[in-house]
Length: 427
Ligand code: FHN
Image 1 (spheres, rainbow, N blue to C red):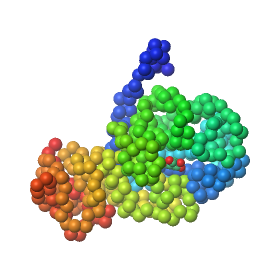
Image 2: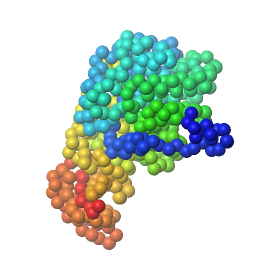
Image 3: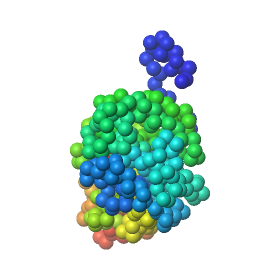
Image 4: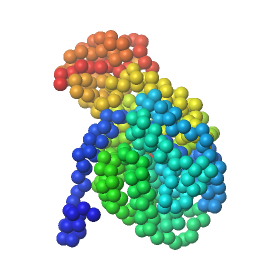
């Protein structure tokens, strides 16, 4: 416990507010510049090919569900291939499920036998393999960690989900929270530099005492640069370093998940799926097009947010071809237009139905996503020196009008997803 906190407890003063360490602030800047990450939902559930909620949805007992681990043997898992794919897609970080709601640890935790080393024939620590490969290829690694646990006996009283698992109707909540902290300690001490912890599942028991302050303090003490985010669907809590949205752009609530839509000053991230599933779902063929995915990435950047795009690898360890194809196409787009995304912040014109703006010192990028006409009237952007199409460098005409300016776009657009206009502006 730090001295200030001990003093606060002893004197009854309010606990000191969280002060991010300099390396944490630096990591936040890196995060905002990075813009695009790969989300990976992988666990023993992939064996059934019916998503990561299958235990709850099919009302499986723990005894039934544990049998899946005996069948989880991803002999074709190649971490170098996954990391290379993320890089080829233009992604700068990976966020992988270390433990999802089924409680299964994808690393060799010493806190229970419900883990990949002790419970599967595979017997390899995939998080360790991935962490090593990420370091080798220069990609940062975040760990997703579910507060909610359908398997642990001490996850009691139960929350909204996981009632058919056949656990006894008693348990020691504080012991469960100790288990969580012990697992996090393992992740933050045995896997090299961890870019952050991505929490989920608190919404299962929104009113419980999760001892978050203690958990967050532990994480920041072990790795001050590790960014904490929590998908609790509320405005950020004390001690969190970024704010996340799920299947929604910042401030929106089309999913109905959010209890609060407020957008904070913290770095922002939104996550989404390529089809409709997080964990591998063999029957889900409703793939978004590459154009839709690029537009979501661009919109997120215009909302000043990162985009964390999910893949749910198959039980053999491969990423399905429909995902690979789209990710490679996104990477090709980013190799062409990346300067208008990476290192930018939300631009001077707030998001509009036609598109968004991004900016970095000396440049504003106008992303025209959905505008059929050649003339596009926008609010005035001060200090514009030149305007060109980013795709070709072709100069574009701008005329000033009362209250704004008109961009004269070419009749035929160089890119079906996004016409990017680069405006050089006075610094
Ligand atoms: O229940 C989870 C779901 O399985 C998935 O992990 C997503 C990712 O954002 N989060 C939860 C729902 O809010």
